Length: 213
Image 1 (tube, rainbow, N blue to C red):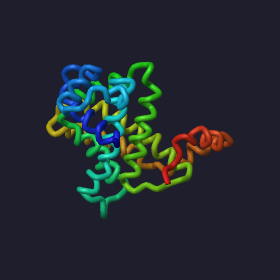
Image 2: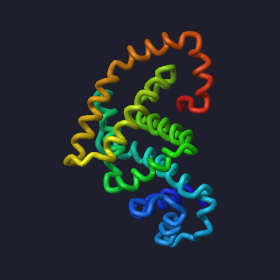
Image 3: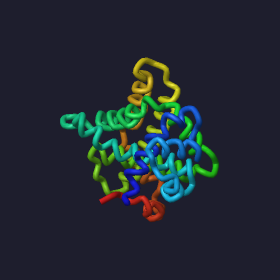
């Protein structure tokens, strides 16, 4: 039995409940009951309960991004506009579940989950760049993702508290942050210059999150 569709369905079903009751084993069980799913499967699908559910939600959102962008079309758009649209769509899809997302970020902010949060944020930045057509495989792969991870994280937190109409303030905030890092080639040169001989060591350190083929 393929587990990914089951996990996708479960975390989606959890969203309305997580907004009120948080991400918990009980919320997971309620979602499973709604889907007529055998509760004995839960321990196998999400061994760590809520933490695994939140982690899968982030990865599920990353996977849906490419299809969302394809539906809009990116032809004729510059890289900056593509990245803006990618981040905007990444958040807009879940606009009806902002409170559930807020509670999910609270779980990831716990000290024991900070390493997981960093990995998930890096994965989202990678998914965003891949969705807009980036296929870099040199040192710029790292600098692009590190920069976008910071922009995305800041925009996510802004979006969670944004009460403006259609989140217009968030999209203005996002454009300003992207404008701040538009000089990415120059930033790359500065970073490489500062690293000097440590560049190779850093590349080796990130072998576990190397550019995708």
